[in-house]
Every structure is written in C-alpha cells, then in structure tokens.
Length: 231
Image (tube, rainbow, N blue to C red; front, top):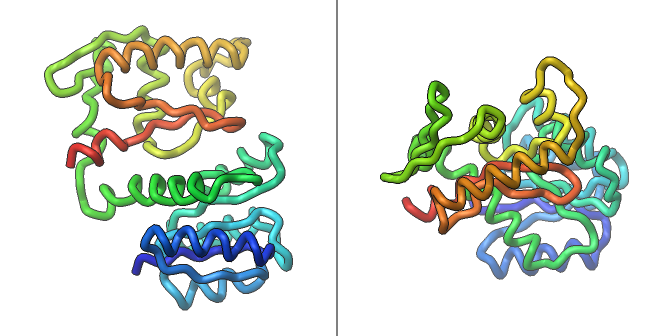
C-alpha cells in the first residue's frame, strides 16, 4: 500500500509535504476539505493520515475522533496552535503524534517513519515489549539482555505506565494520576525529576538507546526503536 493521506488546505505546504514523502518512497493523496476525509478513507486504504488541525469544512479533532470509530490507522496531527490543551485533546481523541507549524519537511518525514515503525512489530505479530525490557514488579528490577538495574517504587511505576503503551504520549498530569492515586499534591517538576533519574538509570542499562522520549508541550513516551533496530 505505502500511501499517505495528506489533509492540508495550504496548496504550497501540501505539495511540499507530498514531494518529500514521495522522495522518501511513499505514495501520497491530498485533500483540502475536512468533509471529504471520512468518505475518502472508507474507500481507500492508506498507511497513515497527516491531518491539519484547522482544515476547512470540518475540525481536525472531529475528523480524528471519527476515524478512530472505524480504524486504528496512524494519525499525525499538524497544527499552528501550540497550546498544550489542543495537543492533549488531540491525543485523547486518538492521534499518534503532533507536528507544529512551522516545521522542517525532513522532520515531518522522520515523524512519519517513526510512527510507522512503531506499528510494524504489532502488525507482524512480533512480541515487542518483552524483547527489549523485562520488568519485575516484585523487586522493581529491570533487565535487558544480560544487564539489570534496580529502580525505586515511583521510578518503576513510571516506567511500567509508559512501557505498557509504547508510542503513546502521556502528559505529566496523566502520569501523576497513575503514580499518585491518593491525589496527593505534587508538581510537574516532581514528575520531571523522577523521569530524569529514571532516564539516567536506563542509560546505564541500554547506553545505545534513549528509551523515554520527551514530546515538547505534551509529555513523555516510551519508544521501541531499539527493538526495531535489533530485528
């Protein structure tokens, strides 16, 4: 299939996106009206949707929600609105990633490839998570190949939450809700501090790979790129 749907009403930008994606080996189709997206997708299979948030004819978040009602196809939302609430709302509606305007076309292609890589192991029936890390909830130990580290209870909980849904972006608030179910008062800085310590320990375990990634303005995600390179 190898086709990307570009939903973008700026002709020059749509052409630029299409040119770079085609150069990277993808086929593309462009739509400039939000009302056309759902009917077109139901008739034409694609690998990924590059969806502008402010598309004429229909709101991008509504389109994202409707796509999720019948398909789990990857969606990358493109937006010039950098407010965090829009990003988080988009992710809750099922978007897989964000790109903020203005952006580098090379970054856009890299994001597309990264999202598609995260989809491949599941599509191929590969047992992804256990091939990279083994988590022991009894001892708070994490093992990778022949190496092992020990985490604090909070660090282990953080890793476990991210690890269970690779590729999903969790906001700091979502992580706090899961790590502190008793609703104690903690700040965003607390989560950042725990993530920093967790990353340092994971670097000792897997020095060749950054496992937990920051997503600007949105939160953190666990990435499986190390597994994919090992396949």
